[in-house]
Figure 1 (cartoon, rainbow, N blue to C red):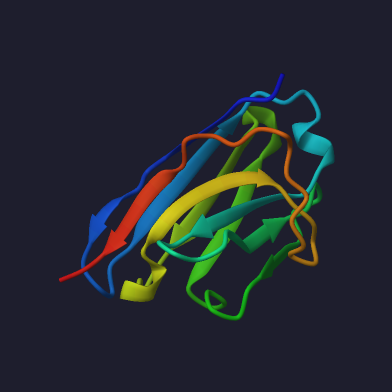
Figure 2 (cartoon, helix red, strand yellow):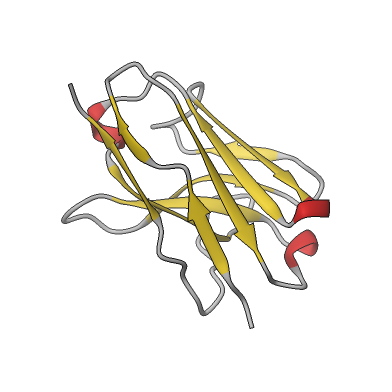
Length: 120
């Protein structure tokens, strides 16, 4: 049974920062690439950042240079540091399993997500 609990979202002005956290209960957490997905209103869910079990990272062009993904395997936790936020980053953010190539590979379970709203 997998459980994913995201937190850290909120309302922030353009140019601001947020740090998201995801606590995972999956026993296989440390062996898989994990990622952060986001879904904006009316759009498909997309994987924007991924971190391998060894700590290698990859980012979608839309967030590269602004977002940093990291993980702590001892705590079964994934983080997303988001800087220089833009209104187009507004979305519900979810963590889940992914691939280093940013192809979706989620568990058959999604957490509730955390809302990020970037607005002045």
